[in-house]
Length: 342
Image (cartoon, rainbow, N blue to C red; front, side):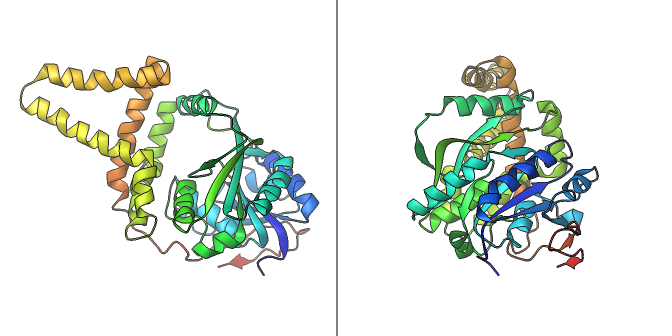
């Protein structure tokens, strides 16, 4: 039953054979002082991820229906079987700093109004344009000992009692922004989120080129997540927070308006206006990102996100708290016995 262990670390994975071993080992080291547990939630890996994970004394749950795969599904699958008083969500391409867990628990125990705490994320792969931009944004942030934030991107430690108030952890319908959506629901209930100036994880993100990654995300449905988040918030207490706090929504609306004006300039035969409209955002983003190369990538990424704002609004949804069917592939040495698990 919930609360029988101090902490659960959930690891969501899909074809993470390169890093999952180190990820699991770091999670086990982090929970060891607390008698905690580690759950790997696999979304249908076809590489050696499961075989590597089965060498560790952890619980392994694999999505029974791969068609349900999403970022939210993996996180929620781990959460729905978690027994800890605290819950940490980790990606299979991340290596956790074990000392952060002790610091995070201590922080939450002394800050009862805070539902979750994160640390400093070290982006190890910045070859792709997206992660190069992300690393630059992290470096520009003020290095306060602690600060309140609206989400815990790249994982965080949560108070289980706060999560139970919500009914579910991650929305299984979301292909991205599940951390933001969770943060909005928590903040709508009066909770805070914090980030402390302590190294929490090393993130070994995609090495795929930025443009190939954008194309892959369009094919996988990831790019429609902005619209999914907006639709999920309709009629909910966190609706206003989604509209005001998620930059992708504001950017998407601005880009859609830009499209309209571009079409007007073409239809009215104003080529100079058209050229100005194309070059101005490219110039501004190039200045903001520090180079024309990253500015061009940002402009394309904003257009992809704006398209996703539209398409994501019309995707089918299931109730987010609906249990996710999974198959238990835990190793024989673990307490779990492999069996279907609805």
